[in-house]
Image (cartoon, rainbow, N blue to C red; front, side, top):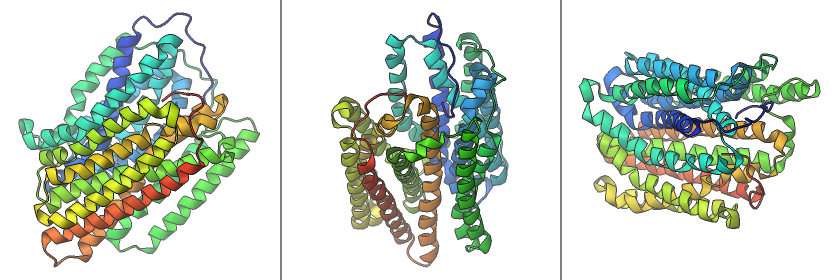
Length: 485
């Protein structure tokens, strides 16, 4: 749920096919999560095959996440207007077709354009699932339904990079990296067939209106922020990069003004303006930018290091990150057990562990050099992952704790968009730091070049986490109520 939505009437009786429908919704969530992760592993292989530059590797992931973030602002509202099942199926069909085109891409430009399309269709599909769950399940089963998201997302984050590496390295049907997108086609077709059969129909509500000016300004602000941060290094930071950054600031300021005016006039808004008067919510947005940016950016830097610096193939690169993914799963489990009792203290401990893990990885790389291996890096990665799990698991509940029920839809949608923007921002910033050090060190031994670039990037990532850690002290101590995942 990603916009200020008008509630639908609850069903008098539970949907008879609700558990089968939940499986369809979870399949869509897995498709989205995997497509946000797979190009981090496959990026170097893609560039070797169809061309591109180091900047292209950043864009393969950032293009998807920026499009997803922008689309999420409208996705939930479109489901209200046109019907949630209809928008879910449209999103899944578009996502599946875009995946097929991604698999057939003949140039980096074609792949990037299709990744944007994929992100927009994903944004039309994903928000509908949460709304349909609330419609289908009775209150006594709601917790079990939402509880299924945690294990599925955890398994996807653990298995996603390994699956991507395996698909690239196995070269099924001679497709190589293309299989990471082609695998979505049978999943998407099965999801469409099952969705038509099991998802509940909801009546369209054409009388509802959409905040088009707000959506355009938000998209302009996000795009104008990410484009120069990724392209600036490669082009030598021309003047237009700084002009775009100024446009980004102006667009976000204009967005705030427009939303306030529309709210006063009784028109629909993408974000409830009163949210930004809440210190906990605004600090939560900044915390999310820092934490999610560090998570995605450090994942990109690590896979670049092991593939370009250490010469790992895609499968070994995926396996190298497995300790971090396992650590995240452990951290999520611990957080679920102690969230009610410890609240934001979990985030304090988690942030400290992430910084400690990053520092440990920097030290490990510095000590072992080119001989560093998967097992050598595993302890630091495990600590990093556990810290990330402890930090991320209670994040949404704690930030939303002080939000009133009528603001919860807008607040959760805004946080979800910020999660995507943070990921794109982290890829832009840390990718730029990494490749800037690589280019500045040309002429050095190959291993030393990538070691220093990785160490510098990880220190920046640790700094982002430290900023987010300080901001957590402005959050509520614990979640006093639960508004959904």
